[in-house]
Amino acid sequence: MVEKPDVGELAPPNRTLMGPGPSDVHPRVLRAMSTPLVGHLDPSFIDIMNEVQELLRYTFRTDNQWTIPVSGTGSASMEAAVGNLVEPGDTMLVPTNGYFGDRMASMAERAGGEVVTVDAPWGEPLDPVAVETAFDEYSPDVFGFVHAETSTGVLQPSVPELTSIAHENDALVVADTVTSLGGVEFRADEWDVDVAYSGPQKCLSCPPGASPLTLNDAAMDKVLSRETQPRSWYLDLSLLEGYWGEERAYHHTAPITNVYALREALRLVAEEGIEERWARHRSIASALKAGVESMGLEMNAPEEYWLPSLNTVRVPDGVDDGAVIEYLLEEYDLEIASGLGALAGDIWRIGCMGHSARAKNVSYLMTALGDALT
Ligand code: PLP
Image 1 (cartoon, rainbow, N blue to C red):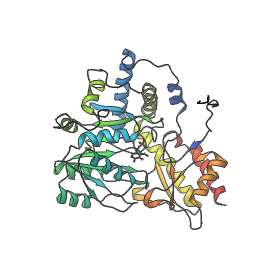
Image 2: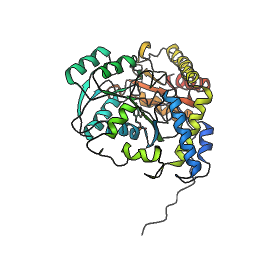
Image 3: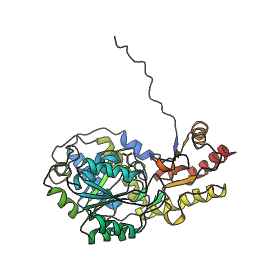
Image 4: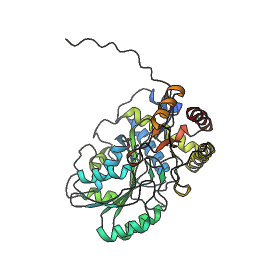
């Protein structure tokens, strides 16, 4: 017989989230999530969908009609982008300078594409010259890059240069903006990015579950004129068009509460102003950077590519990175994270995103880290 489980009421610890995401959720977003459900085709929800799309366009800096929240985490919006753009036989060019280029590659392969790479060491951005050389060598149909690499704390500069190389070669560009959207300058239209995807749990300070995606007409034309169906029914954008486009017809039941949350999170972006929000992330993260440097610690990413939303700090010789992380969590209820992949054991990753990007959090982190290291 299966016994009745004795599980107590949910009481998670009250953490300060300064890892690579999720970040602290704004109380207004939490309140929005406790409001009553309506149906996913209710006229009031249709209005909410329109508002979310308008707010997403503002945040992505785009007029793209095709701007939606994808049900699922950032990997769902990533797979919606890659899985719809890459047809069997297409070639996709992906970067090797961090953890998430590999994930793009894996998705492109599963979509039936051939994957080719443009290389840069972990901890450095892509060099436009290397991208141009890769285009000459492979003539890819799709080029993906990571605007804010969460594994290395590196920001990809010169985005317009990269997109113009791709467009001169008739390729479409996909940008991963999971750790930049709403926190670090990103301009989809002005920088000529065809497709950008993101996640809500980083600089938007919203729980994961409904993930931003935008496609321009060129990208959507390719998606709608595919010869083969994408391999995922759930993420098929030509079907999702029925729900998020003019028709507003059933495809799958939208994660209503997550859409409420995203609406409130994006309303906070619009209230603050997107440029003001980028400036806040920069100034709060500058204080964080100055603080860790004044403790004698070294940032992993050089100043030119420093990513304010994700600060990578080198673990000093003789210090156990995991023990410090554990101490901060146990003694201070403060979350930071260790390095991933090639940087595992070498760095700490300290997020400064959305509602976590506050002076109060930085002072708290300095006190806690100072204590852990003495
Ligand atoms: N891309 C980047 C740059 C990320 O940092 C992440 C998650 O941390 C993802 C994609 C995948 O997002 P998720 O974990 O929400 O599926």
